[in-house]
Image (cartoon, rainbow, N blue to C red; front, side, top):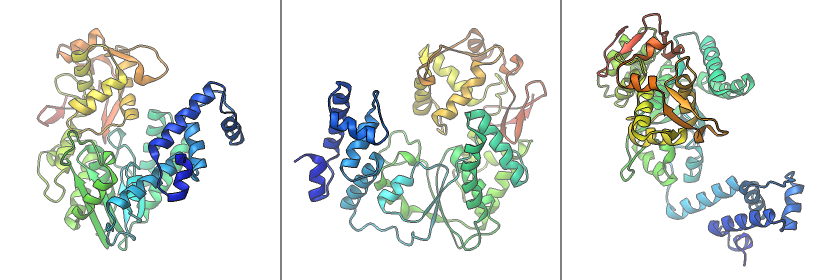
Length: 413
């Protein structure tokens, strides 16, 4: 009995067989066969002739009774999780708001049986201006940056920001929050941003926070974990009180200030109530220009990778950065692409990029100036780089910008 129809008899999906069926259908379509499948796809608005695997997966999912392939996969994941954990229940979780700096765990939470509300707050505060402004003006500044940096439309950004702003504004004394974070600056800035927005400790305020996971060789983020691991993390949550809110307000004020001295002071101290905050602030502080070369740490690491590897596709540079070089991985691939642009398109660039349709496949290599800056024989700030921001600190090369030493000391150039 074919897997598609067998599942309707006993309810258990045979995913390997379904995947194979989708691949066979795609091959048949490319060979001008599978007329019935072609007719079905045409009826669904996919007239071809250049079909993709996603198209035949969609068709296979509909044959199995699902609206889409992702919904089929989600169902199979939930069934498998329930079979492994028949007694699992996220105790007292139904009324909770799960807050996360992206949507990377929402599917896994649902798979594991979590039923509380999910709120995404994904403003990439590790990039662009994050100045101390009134709320409406702040969001306007962030929208303008995201639009410019990622090429999104104003409408898309407004639609993305609106639910996040509403959810943040609606937090009150009766709210029940669980925040999911890891150790990097992207997450820790999300954490202090949300905590600093609270006027008082709500009825329930808990934090799930991890820096590493046993058995994971290179832990990058909670989003890489299987649903079983989220169930394992749930009992490890801990309550936060007024001391955490006070620290978050202090840290947010320091990060959004135009003078980074208070930020540097916080980065140099331990904070038992939020133990991962200090190291994250210290890492983010290194995005200020280095005192010796004028480079942010991310820029410096990119140059080091290319010096070690030679000419390399941008996607592979990103892979090396995330898996070997970056001490606290925080970048997504599109964020990385955005951060490359000032190094490539400067009047005197540090990197050269070969043409190509997909930026990930475009080879990068150091220019002669890039080699000189990496060796400390030239300072990037002397080459008229584009203006940029780190938190609330504007970096304008010819206006005595703030710089940082490798041990976290800040001062004017």
